[in-house]
Image (cartoon, rainbow, N blue to C red):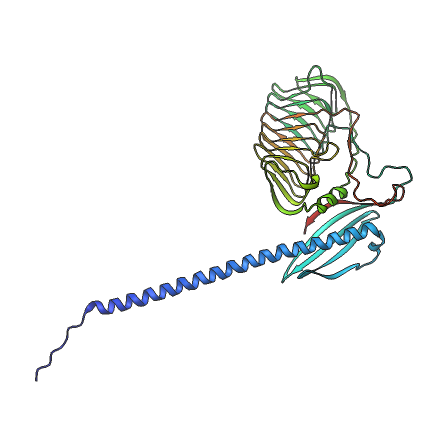
Amino acid sequence: MNTRLQERNPQAGSSLILALTLTVIAATAAGTAYYYAASQAQMNRNSTNILQARAVAEAGLNLAYNQLRANIALTNNPNPWPWTNFGNGQYMVTPTMTASNLITLVSVGQFNGAQTQVRMNLQYYPAQQSGSSLYGPYVFNYVLYIGGNCSWAGCGTFNGGSIYVNGPISLTGSASWGNSTGTLTVASSTSVGTQGAATIKATTITAPSISGKGVSGTEIIGKVAAPTLPSIELSPFYQIAAQNGQVKTGSISVANGFTPPGGVLWCVGSLDFKGTATGCFIATAGVSLEASAAVYPVNTNWPTIYNQTGNINFAGQANTYGFVYTGGNVQFAGGGAMQGGPVIIMGNLNKAGNSTMTANIPNAGFLITPPIVNSQQSSNTLQRLVITGWDMI
């Protein structure tokens, strides 16, 4: 009996192994893609929940602030705003009196497992006496006030007004302050000095130390008393922004040609100006102006930019007009300008390039008049609760 043995195909086993390998790879890739998609979806949900929790916390702050305006005695209650449902979340607001007229509100917001905290600082003023002004006036006797140091380099200029710097004033390069026809007064609590071709032409220069061949004018060697800066009442501006849906959070980009409804944009975060804008812009954490930015006041008696903390950074030919305040530093890089004044810089001024400052403000001072919003009380009975700060914890 003859038996034929069939020859085995050596490629059959290899094909099976290859097929199994490809199946495993495909399954692994599908599992990885599913895991990534699920993780990404969870991250998106978490980010959304945090934003919702922040919105709930801010809603609690708004409620507490408005109730305090009507009844300041609520600060005597240790728990005036317990956990309260708001939409699909909840908030709790706790007040703390840090001084006889200073109040801190901390609002905790929760939403779908996420939690965040927002803090508001307030200053309380009792009812005004009969015949007194409701919100001011606020007078600034300095066109340029710098709470730190002034480093002025490059070929930039400054014309007119009064300058006070709490630290040293240093001009280098071909920087130029003042001119033969203008009126300029310069004061520093530390020193005033020029190097190279830099010049200061002033009616008076007052400081414990004055140096440099470029300084001309009446020099007064001696101590300089720091000026007292009045506080600026921000609560009326916040109310305008809130009434017009212009209270924003995060990093906000201000588009070219933008004017906020009602004139005021309040940002709990930072602002980035892309082009021309007109308004009263209040930020809590920094301002940047890109190369072509130009920011104008919507009302010459209101701040153009008020930056509570952080810095103001100028790029290229960026410009501001009108009153500008920052609790941090001002950094110039290029040929930008701050015009119209006054300018209050609580930190340092670092200026390079050919940037300029031009002041058209008389030495008698500059009047900042906050708006009166929906006042239903007479001017002799109104008490004031002023927002001085707002930030995330």
